[in-house]
Figure 1: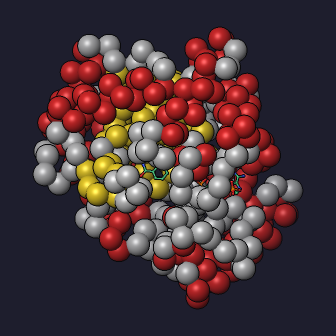
Figure 2 (figure 1 turned 90 degrees about the vertical axis):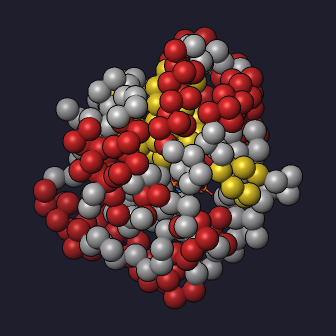
Length: 337
Ligand SMILES: NC(=O)c1ccc[n+]([C@@H]2O[C@H](COP(=O)([O-])OP(=O)(O)OC[C@H]3O[C@@H](n4cnc5c(N)ncnc54)[C@H](OP(=O)(O)O)[C@@H]3O)[C@@H](O)[C@H]2O)c1
């Protein structure tokens, strides 16, 4: 199997392109995004054979789903039909954009789905998942509600997001799970200890986000980059002061390896995640056709054992300075318990 070969989500999930397109940054969290360019990027991705589009109903409070809906409506029919939607729900937002909790109650799940179908303009969602475990609702109840939506034809597959091994097992006992969406990159390797062995044992795939650590290891982030107050990175430990300096030194070490291979840093970082196994599908956060083209170039990068050893030496597990989320957000991660 090559990095170009489609990958299957879980044992019962859909076949998807080896890279998915994560659309979050087109609506929120990474500063201004250009709407026309965002839609052109989705069209270019579909044209290039990307089939998996990832979103969350809370990305821009519905904005991201409406954007994807518009892109799907204006895409050629053949491209629209190949697109698979992966939707997260459950995060609650205030009118000012504040994050005010999670809701995984069965009635809420069905309500979220009804709105998502409308905003996306589709008759079903391909993979549906709660973004964070609701500590007040057993995962069995949330997954049970998605299973009912599957029986009714509104959803095709159950996914999970940022949950740990025990929750994965409990969820998988209720319904087949297509994939766990979770952060995984050269500098976020926490899943290797117990989560990845669990998904592999249970036949669940991983859709990996943060493959470029939100641009930190893309090779494009300058040392003097300023972020707006509502940019995720303004509050992310890895982007602060001494941590940022240390992490960008790691990027320079990667740049030397990338240059020797004639590829970009971003391509090397994405290719590394692709090389971890056919059960892993990186989600690319490209917001422009230029970044998309660069990301897709990773599919042509072959990393042999010698390359992997050099990369490991330059950026060993745990090399990053700073946690992947601020403390308040870490507290919501069942995957970090
Ligand atoms: N389940 C969850 O909890 C969760 C959490 C976060 C994200 N996600 C999903 O994962 C998707 C990916 O997001 P991410 O934050 O993980 O993305 P990422 O790929 O780690 O980072 C995306 C950032 O990298 C920069 N970048 C530089 N070069 C790039 C290139 N060649 N290709 C793509 N981006 C490049 C982009 O900035 P510029 O555009 O300014 O260059 C963008 O801001 C999201 O869209 C979302 O669907 C899921």
